[in-house]
Amino acid sequence: MRYRRLGRAGLQVSQLSFGSWVTYHNQVDAGRAAEMMAAAYDAGVNFFDNAEVYASGRSEEIMGEALRQLGWPRLNYIVSTKFFWGLDRQGEAINRKDTLNRKYLMQAIDGSLRRFGLEHIDLVYCHRPDPHTPIEETVRAMSDMITQGKALYWGTSEWSAGDIRAAWEIAERHHLHKPVVEQPQYHLFHRQRVEQQYARLYEDIGLGLTTWSPLASGLLTGKYRQGVPEGSRGALESMAFLRDGLVDAAKNAAVDQLEPIAAELGGTLAQLAIAWAAHNPHVSTVITGASQMAQLHANLGALDLIDKLTPEVLARIDAITAHLAQ
Image (cartoon, rainbow, N blue to C red; front, side):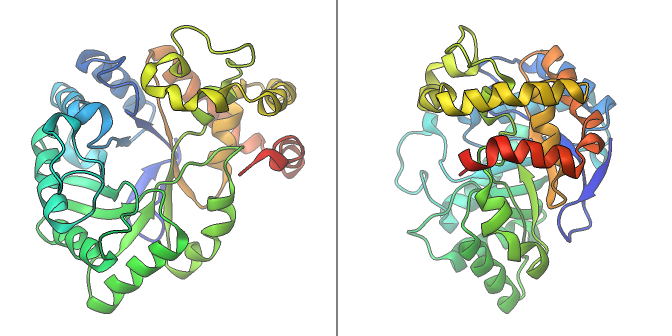
C-alpha cells in the first residue's frame, strides 16, 4: 500500500480506502464489517469512510462496534463522517435536516461520537452545500468542532469550487481551521469537477481529495451490460435512482471496449477503473466498498495496475470514455 498526504495537511491516507455506503446495515453486520475491515487494514488501508445519513446512523454504529472488536491503536486508523441530511429516524425537525446551520452541526458531531464510541473523529465533512445557511456560520461551526477536540480535520463533499474557496478564505480571514479536503464523485464517466473545476484549488489552497464511486455504482464492473442483475446494488430499492444510468447503452458499450485493456494489464474492469482514479496525483485516496470479502480483495488488486497506466494506456482509455464523461 502507498500513502498520500491529504492535500497540504500532514495526515497521510492509504491510496485505497474502505467505505460503508450502501453496505453497512443493509448488507453487512458488525461481524462481517470487522472481518472486512481487518482484511483491509492488514493490506495497509488506514482510512474508513462513513456518514451520519448512511442507514440512518446505523452504519456508524456498526463501524464503531467493529472497531471495538478489532481493538486497534487509535493512532493507526482514520475514521470520517459527514453531516447534512440528518437522521430519518429522528423525524423531520426543521433544524435537523438538509442543513449546515450551527445548531444542527454542533449536535450532529456529538451524535456521531456516541454512535462510533470514539472520543474524536478524524475527518468531518459537510456532506452537501447548504444555500440557506451563510458559509461563515458553517465554517465557524466546523472550526469549533476541531477547537473542541471532537474532530481533527474538516472538509466538504460535492461542493462547488467557488464555495470551497469562499469557505477557505473566510477561515483564513478569521484565523479559523480551514477546510483541507473535498470528497467528490470521480470515475471515468464523471470527471469534470475533479479535473477542471477544482484545478486551481490544488495549488492555491492545497486541497486534498477523498473520491467516491470509482466504479460508477457498479457500471464499470461490467455487470450491468445485460440489465440489472438480482442481488446487485442497482436492484436495491434504495438505489432505484441509479438504474437509468447503470443501463446506459453508450456507457456499457464503452465498458465493453475497456475490457481488453484491463485484460492486457492483467486485471479486471473494476481494477482498471479503481487504478485509473488512484492514478490521478490530486486524489489522496479512492474510497472503495464491498459487501463480500472476495470483492474487497479484488478491489485491493487494483494497486497492481496503477504503475501500468502509462501515458499510452491512459490515452486509449480517454479515447473510449472521455466523450461520455460529465
